Picture 1 (spheres, rainbow, N blue to C red):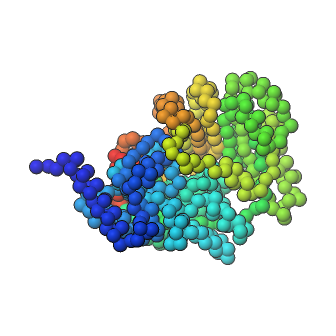
Picture 2 (cartoon, rainbow, N blue to C red):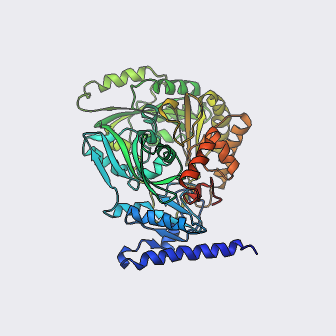
Picture 3 (spheres, rainbow, N blue to C red):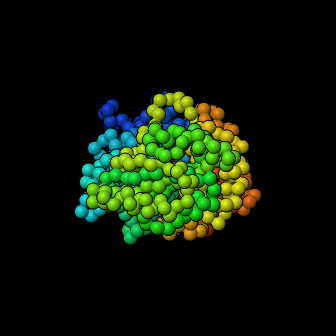
Length: 505
């Protein structure tokens, strides 16, 4: 007679607790690394999105990489393996770092012990060895002590290195240097089989390319060797307003085709008070009443380019002239310029630390991140920016929009982007009250439905799909290699079940 799913679940839960007992039996109380108390479980079943909540059986707080290896090997040894989800700072928004009934690994626990990889800067060879648990803001601090820095960033620095490298890691520098995954020389990875493997483009390349942008499906990153360059000391930083979408995109694409700027992003301005808020950090010759008037004339929608050029003591004498020359090549609304000059660190850390450690969380973040092919960007503007967005009228969203160059990405990696030389990224960064995200989800759904009906082949960044067919469509021609890599490195489908690619949960 077949064993019921309920009995299998009970047996699996028993095995996980057996693993806990076996590990803890050989440790002193202060060394215990597996917990199943209510506080640990609650934290492991929450993320920044505060929408999905999957309850694990237990949480591993590793004191060394070997603790994670032992856990994954224990799962492999069982006839019904339990799933394992590596969690960094918990900034996924749809439960991607969760597991129902499995074990969540709190990677940041490695940073509390001397057995983690930490941050080691090799100035002579231009790289830093960084633990997958480390935060990018700490990488920045450590490398600046050597007057060096990574070249590609994310807008928010309080994210783990392993977390962003499992996705791609993009910001305004990516047009020039590619995403963060393109600036990695070497990785240490724990595979789904429990193996500890060092990999690079030349050593175990299939694992290297698979893990980078691999959504945690093929291994857990415990160390990354990051490319460094000489760090600037300061930046000139401007925001420029546009009323015409075609002019905006023409200027954005011009900027990413030259090497003069160091950072190019953009925004949708959907609230007339947005630019007034900028005035606390930026100076501007424009009057707020003029901005409001332009905003209303343009049916409640303006666009902005955010542009940055780095400099140091050697280039301080010429930066103003160089920057002025760059601005003369652009066609923003005359006088609608917001400018400032800050340290390199303050620019990269401009968002600050927004993490809230207190539970329960009071906000939800139903974000939608898309890559849009350049050939359809005008259609997207007509159908989404000038139609769906104004009707939604959300007061607390940040909509980031800018182009990227495909030739700065390595197609051997698992990340998926549109098949055009230039494509745009759109980040709809919504905020709602806890459990009040449904209206925003409906708005997100309208955008995806429009793209489907219009034949605009967008790709989700930080993807969230509910069916295997959706994932097959997402990966397109890469689906076969994704399946191959899963079979090679995690054949029992233990790792990262929250992505819902090969697991239902």
